[in-house]
Amino acid sequence: MRAIAVFCLAAAPLWAQPPAIRTGGVVNAASRMPSMLPGGAIGRGALFDIVGVRLGTGDQATSVTVSAAGARVRVPLLAVSPQRIAARMPAGAPLGDLSLTVTVDGAASPPYPLQVTRGNFGIFSRNREGWGPGRVDNVAPDRSRSANSLANSARPGQALVLAGTGLGDARPEVWVGSRRAFVETVRRGTAGAAADEISFRLPPGTPEGCFVPLQVLEAGFASNTVTLSIHEGGGACEPPAVLPVAAWSGRTAGVVALSRTVRSPGARVSDEGLAVFAAHDAQDPALSPVLLIPPLGACAAYTGAITSGPQPPSSAGDALMASAHTSGRDAGPRITVSRGSLRTPISRLEGAAGVYKRLLGEQGNGRPGRGGPLFLNPGGLVIAGTGGADVGPFALSIPAPEPFSWENRDTIGAVDRRAGVTLRWKPPSEPGVVLLALTGVEPSGAAWGACYCAAAGDAGSFTIPPAMLANLPASQASALSMPSLGLSWLPFANQRPLTARGLDNGLAISLYVETVEVQVR
Image (cartoon, rainbow, N blue to C red; front, side, top):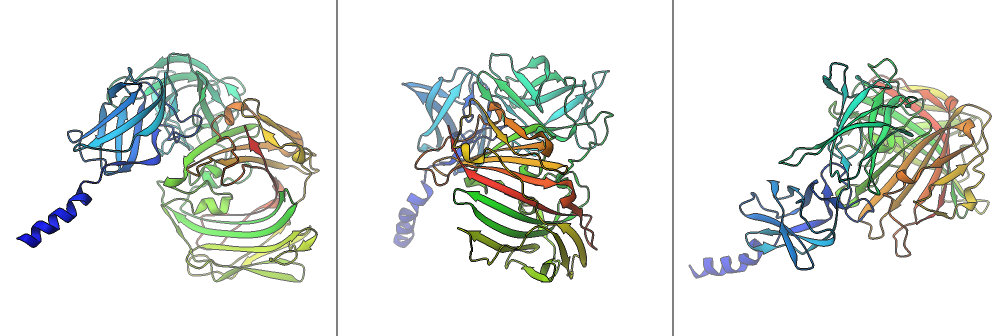
């Protein structure tokens, strides 16, 4: 008996551990934007989630309060589990900086710093991650509604209804692509898990595509970005002109990407080869934000918590493997890339089924680096694979990455989020698409923000608008890494179909990339 008593006394501290909220773990239920980012405040009346550990199993044992300057308000709870609490911020919650505390069976979590505002809207996405196709319905002339999807596009001029949470008192603005839509009605969900709804109509000239960005601006805040499917005749959308991966049907896919990247400062140049062969669950067609290519002239912005997953993939190949519902496919022990009489293998990564990766060459200060001399010089390339258990043999020809001139690269030392940023390049002689990306990590390393845009190569310039930069983390001297601004040049001729046994879809690309470190203010 004494031994049992001693064991119980020793174990008691373990049982009594208090609840804890994950860093970046208090988020608008729709946008999922971490609280340390500019748009991470929770609006009064908004649905929000608390993510952590030991949060309880029911509202009878768990309570949540917000407090500031001596005022304390209890938060109504909608659902409780050990790792997640769903709640609604009270309409009478204190405004400004406050603390949120979770108490379970009398044990309180460390106070979590949070900002509460009158409103800060988030849009629900179909995947509940705050990105990808939005929870938006097309509205027919008889007022019936149907879910907007890749197979059920909205028509320009059509009415739609979006669902979100966190509306304030101000009139919201709805932006679709680069156009402001006409807001018709606003309905606020005030009880239980009811969402807010905004009815709007697409304006004339709305860009068409499978992944047209949708964002709401209100009271100085920019919402998360989700996407709409828009097509002149309704029905199925038109996939992006480049990298149509996220619009593919079928379960199996392969992507081979050859890239030359010039990094500044230092003008380091690297040639890289990456191939990914994967099968994904049909429930998860939109694998990563980086694959949701917007229409030409449009941008999308995304954010996330690094503690709940990695930063967004930097390439289409990486993005194919970004989903938990994806498994690799065996395409053989290696893939080869040939240029004339030169041939180099891209071997399969150990422990990463379906992934093939290699540094093909690099140069710094005019001298070859550890990867040997540069390989992807101008001219024709041949990509080939002998095949494996899941993917058959293949061979195709593709041009090497085509250099282009980013004219104001070295003059962009800083990006002002309130003013946007203009990038200029020399229009290439052949048709293609310039993909723009600005990514940054919050100084504590807990959250990231990214902006992706697409422009026609012959446009020669593009301005990223302030709303798409609003939720990027600002740079600080203590940051783990500097934000990166990059342009990728992908001529249409440098995108070739890849066909092989075992693949429903396949694509090979070669692209030229330039990146520069910048400050974000």
